[in-house]
Image 1 (cartoon, rainbow, N blue to C red):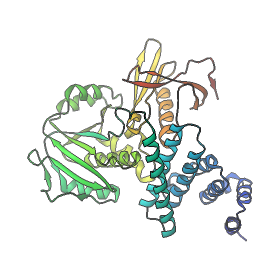
Image 2: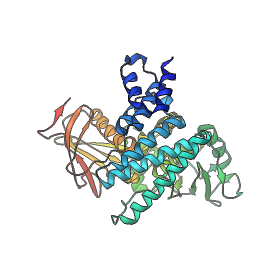
Image 3: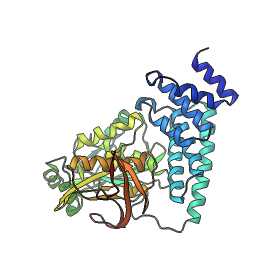
Image 4: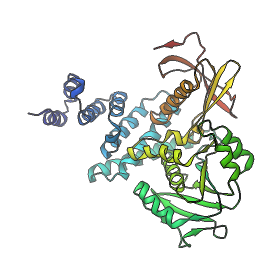
Length: 399
C-alpha cells in the first residue's frame, strides 16, 4: 500500500496521529508538498492549529494557490482564533480566516468544499459583527482607506484599454456600472465598476496631485532617483478608490493594487502616488506580480521609510494602519539601512501574512533577533501612536 493510500485510510479512521508520525519520520527530501498538506490536515484534526499553519507556509508558493490550501489555512486560523488570548488577536485571526475562505471560493472549488467555505464565511461574518457591536474602541484614522493616484502626463485615460489589460493581467472581468464612452476625460470624469465582486472607482482629475504631499512623498523614495523630477512634471492624475467597505480588508487591498498595476500601462501614466511615496511604474508592476502566485503584495501596500539620525539609522512602516494595524518604528539602529529595512519587512509580513498582533509590553522574534521589546507610544516620524521595536535593549540576543 502506498503512503498516500495509507494516509487516506488513517484519515477515514480518525487516526491522525499516525499520519503525523509517518510524515515526520520521512527524510526531508521525501516530504513533498502533497504530504505537507496532508500533515497540515492531520494537525488541524488534532487541534494543533499553529503547527498546521506552519506546515502550510512551508509549501512552495506555486502550490499555495489551490482552493484546498486556502481552505486548510482558513480552518486553522478560524479555530486558532477561539484560543487566542486577546480580543485583538482573535479579530486578526478571524479576518485572516475570512480572507482564506474567500480566496478558496474565488478559485472555484468542488461543490462540497464550496459549501463548507460559504458556511465558514457566514460564521466568521457573524463573529466579526458581534465583536464590532460590542467593541467601543474607535477605528484608526486611515483604516479601510484604500486609495492611490496614478500620475499622468496629460488628462487622458483609455477605458477600453484598461478593461482589456485588467483581464490580461489578472484573468478577471470588469463589470461597468453604466455604458459611458470608452474614454475617461475631464468631461466624463468618473468610472465606477465591479471587479472580484468588489466595487471600485477611477476618477480623472485634470490637475496635479496635491503638490506638497506628492513632492514630499517622492523625495522619500530612495529607490528611484528621478521620483521628484517625474512628480514635478505630471499634469493630471487618476484617483483610484475601493468603495466596498464591507469586503474583507485584504481583498480591498488586493483589488487596489491590481487596478493600480494595470493603470500603469496607460500611455499617459508616469508614476504611482500611494500617499507614502511615488513608485516607478515598472517597479510597481513587478512588485504586484506576486499576487499571481497567491502571495500578498506587501511592498505595494507598505512603504518602508528610512532616514539617518545622529545615533544611527531609523525606519518606519507606512500602510499597516489601512489594515487596522499600528505602524511600526525602529529608531537609532546601529546597522546598514538595508538590514534595518529587512527587519521592518519581516515585521510587517508577520502582521499581514501571519496575523501577528504586537502589543505594548510584548517581545518579538524576527530577522535573527529574539526578545525584542515592543512599546506603544506617540509616533516619531509618523502621526498618532506607533509601535516601537527596540534594537538597543540589554535583553537583545542575536540568534
